[in-house]
Amino acid sequence: MAPNRRFLLVTIAALVALTGMSAPAVATERTPEACAAALDCPAAEIDLMTMPERLTFVRAMSSGPAAKVVPGYTHRWRNIEGVIEFFESARLGAPGSWVSHVDTGILEGIERGIAIASGKGTDTFGNPGSTLWASYLTRLARGDLRARSAHDKAWSEAEQASTERGVYLAEVVHGVPPTGVEERFFQFSEFYRATLRSRVPLLDPLSPGPGPGVQKQLTILDWFTDVSTPVPSRRGCELAYSLSQFDLPAGAVRTAALLAAYTEALAADFLTDSQRS
Image (cartoon, rainbow, N blue to C red; front, side, top):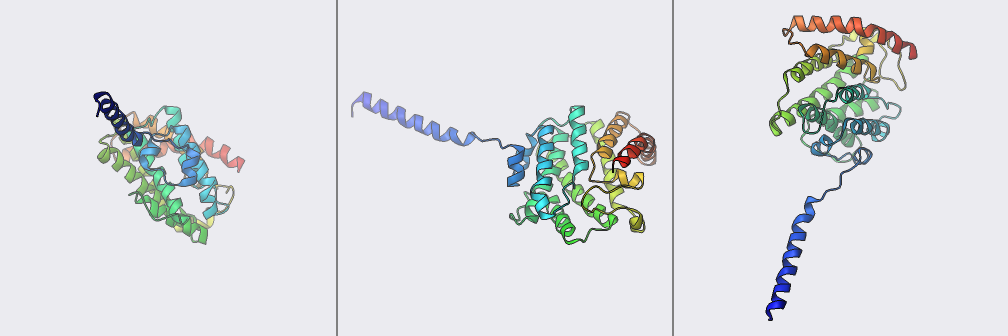
């Protein structure tokens, strides 16, 4: 074979090999709407979303596939929307950050929970919150969660598991620890979920259940723990993050400070928001 021909064939073969090797590295980034429709975007993909994109993602899941599982109950994660709105306004949660990974765990759990409840496979993506969200949606559709205490317990347990998955992704998988402020802020969020789980069933006759549409909240506790509105969670995050700037003693002192701040600062928001209901 002539030297020039051999050189040409070798060059072509090398180019073909390089082209084949580089092709898998090219990936198409899906839109939040596409992720909400497919319900199969993994944590790594959600982590790349901006906070406005995550808002779109949550809202599209609520009004789309989740509404098919539980018709009429479209606002099951509006308090999470309020948290994301706060992250955006505070410029928190850049991709790869501790806040982003934790939030990603929550959204991935919801996503896969809807998928499982919709009959689109059983893969949890390793997120233990997904099966709890699937159970929550299935029970809600059956009418098993009409009582406010039962509803809030199921909702908070699903979010707790998804949140813990997010913490695992951040700290174990990616080796990203929280800052002191982020850790204190996280403890306030733990207080919120504990409040939902500890609702006393004796108060159920006085508290509106999770019915379709907007439910008028009679007390500030009902309003604060209402998952169908973004206002209390967004305002609560603003206050909690401000308090997190100070390293208050853990335990009773921190809890008392939080309760006092919430009660005083959120009272006006509760009255205004209740009047709209």
